[in-house]
Amino acid sequence: MTQTEIIKALTAAIDRGEYKYGDRLPTTRVLADTYGTSQQTVASALTRMASLGLVQVQRGWGARVITGKPARIRLGTYRSANREIATGTAAWSRENGTGSKEGPTQVSQTVTTEVDADTGIAVGTEVVERSRTRYDADGAPCQHKRTLVTVAAATLAPEGWTGLPPMMSPGDINPPAGMSIAKWLGMGVEKVTYEVSVTSATGAAAEALKLPEDTPCLRIVSRGTKGDGEVAYATATTAPLRSSISWEIQEDGVG
Image 1 (cartoon, rainbow, N blue to C red):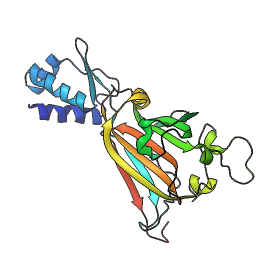
Image 2: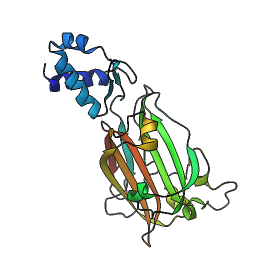
Image 3: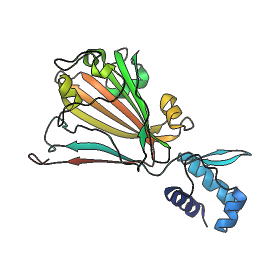
Image 4: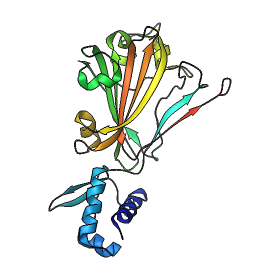
């Protein structure tokens, strides 16, 4: 088998669950015998898979699977394409098998830096940071989500609310059915945009996803922009490169 064929065969085996997240692959000798090729070809295939964030290769130790099955990232359901405001109440949903779960939400206050430039929030802005990691049914981390909310927006609360404002409290935030969090809190958001790019996993995202620094990943940044052009919040989600992204747009009066 060629290098490309070996990569396809091993990736298919991961997808079928024959090799799960954290499993150690057979040695290059065993794989060469299995696929009827040379150890050099197998080693080249594993090196290429490592560059794609599928396995981690260490000299004298072998290769370990560092990806789960392909994750599906759903961006939500929206009204017709000519509407300014996305009305889906769940911007992300888990579609990664029975048993998929979310880690606890970590909440802190920080100041934006150059690293946050693509969020659209000015550098040096005081923000509330909300972050969490999601795991698929096999326990593989499949998304790291980090939301930055300006302090002005994060301190908002619905009428009659008692205690900490929702965006400053750990745990899930559940607005009334059919209403976005931004509208529920009165953030004044008039437009929500999404940008998807391929970038290198670094810092907290690499640590959360248990990936070597600079492993290629998807980065999805959504921004909620107010009428005056100020970004009230931005969410950056990092996911393994094999993830797929989907969303649904409904015509007015449907759903």
